[in-house]
Figure: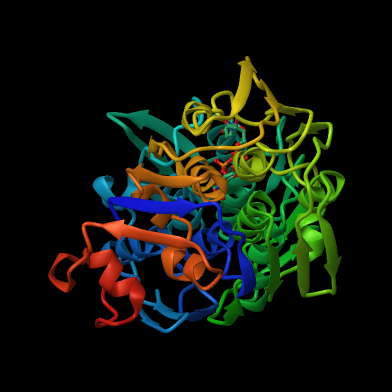
Length: 436
Ligand code: EPZ
């Protein structure tokens, strides 16, 4: 998907089933490499990051095949400890193979990861945590070389890093004794990882709280249904709010979206929910006050850009403070090109509602920034064009088809011919053989 076009100004209406979570399935795929057996992940989203991760696993000897939204993996005879550098550089979550391979083999040579450029995104918390467990870590020529089976012990994270928590849980699977992680991240995706690993025989307690304990034990294969994607859900809700529409989402956990639902409700949306579904009816939006991002259960940083897009027409002043990443307002120039009134100072953006937005030519910058551009373009009068739209494919499966079911006028150019499909696309769409 190189470029997408949107003819905005139409309210989105309809129902969508939320896909499996990108930020849950990626650690789960890495975890499969730590399990000496066959595993099955259900409800896997058809996104590029999943295809790239499967290709990374394939290179380590972890075979996989996709049947619809199920991915079957077999790591029984996997011995690789050095994933492909080009593939690893395409996403941040390739760094989770560090913990998985240390946990399985006591050795890993991981190229430095890629992913959305939201700031420095260092790995110091990952590496100091592994060193606290006795793993020797050397970083040279862009490769993290780690040796040694983790000892038992305690790791104290000074910041609840999601990736560092996940990496340490994975490494602890192969530790010589119990591991305690203090200051762990509490995101629902971490609890989902522990649920899967415990189904594989691990003994993990406290996942989803700030204190996680891992008691090493033999692992075996298992199957697991991936958590619904709370960020995909947030994005569609923002698109409905931005366009004055009415959207029902099913197969999700509203409880995992509480801060986002509170902001949209404060802004004038009517939200009704059950345990696994919710309906948002957009009203005339007014500024909801100040929004501050933070580690779960605070307002999620990944919803910051889409929510900003939803509030561009909200009467009054909305202050958005981004406390997690130092460079996560990269989508603001594009929103201004659509006619938004946004002032940024450091990590604070002030959004003043305008009467209307107009179409413009935009360039996507990162996954959630691109999602914000889609939400805003859908609410703008006239046609918009978004280049570098491949960012979206990393985390939103079948985006065009799904928005079209809600009445969006959205298409891509050049029209993708069957011969132009990339390897990942054919594989993830499930239409081709299951090999990455
Ligand atoms: C995960 O990234 C998510 N990615 C991100 O989603 C999400 O924004 C982030 O968590 C925060 O919730 C996946 O799960 C694949 P962190 P991660 O480690 O693990 C700093 C999306 O759009 N930090 O919690 O990389 C870091 O620089 C993506 O789906 C260190 O300083 O996030 C950042 O400022 C984007 N040292 C903050 O902590 C470290 O060693 C949070 O990072 C690690 C992190």
